[in-house]
Image 1: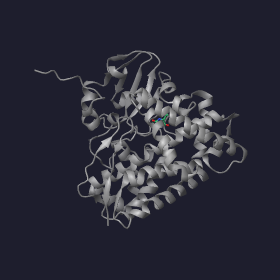
Image 2: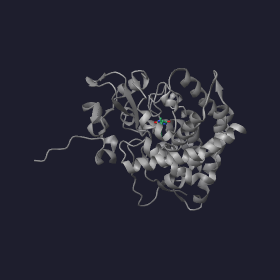
Image 3: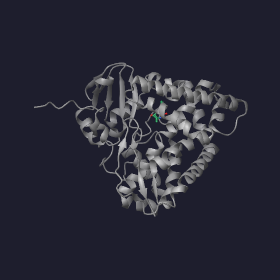
Image 4: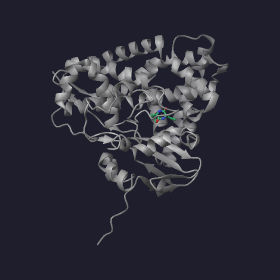
Length: 402
Ligand code: 2IO
């Protein structure tokens, strides 16, 4: 008899369909240790929530090695105390009021422009034809960068995102990622210099000129924030849009309801984020040793919060493996705030600062695409496949419509 190898989140079986393993992990290995990367994986809603809420016991120190080398400076998630409060406030301002209204106009314009060529054909790959270029175009418009550079920026972004979202990198890939980051920084430096001299209405200008409680942003802060905004805006957006359409196509009665009552769109997006969060893992580091479900995690250990598993914990959601935009425990109004029950935007001090923007972006796209894509369905012969462990989404989503 051949012994079954120990379960691993790094296995091909897990990569093919992580949700099939969530219940087993929560019930039998709520603190799963992965020796190859010396990290612990937490899958229960209660444990994940505790880690994200207690930012003193569970720090973001590992971002120094997991993010800083490609962000080219410290990002908000690495900061605490007065510095964090001031700089987070500056970023929040950059995504509210007149700034947000202008950003949503850019969302509209880009969505319209990118979808136009596919309308007469009656077929579009929502990931590769639309979502990916759309997400980068919007990020560039928000930052006030030239959309003509989008292919180049998208390539650099790919390297930066690969670094941040990899569980293991070969030395060659690592060099490639660092190279992308360096070129991106070199591209941004003269832009930052110009915006300091002659600021406009874009996010880079706002970051350059902002002040809160006497705190301002250094060039390094601005660089890191621009790269952070680029990754955070580009990496999950195409996935969320494609997953929303996939779930609605798979649940035609709910699709019909959203078409009839567009006010249900926010609930459909919130349920998509709960059911299939595009960011599946959030790393933290234990300050002291900590006990979860009777298992001790040593001090200084890397802990990965499994957002997908926590979001399907029956202790937190009734009938968790069912996609239901009407679920009573969704709390749509709170779904894009720190009070959310689902953990797709994290929670606590470092909860996603772009959550309100993300909601407005995806709502705008959905409101625009639903009426355009009549009788939307999978293209004949289309095979659905997802990829990614850290961020995860459809490889493609080929749709036919009338
Ligand atoms: C570099 C991982 C797509 C963030 C980071 C500290 C990124 C930070 C996140 C999300 C999503 C990206 N972490 N956004 O999980 O800004």
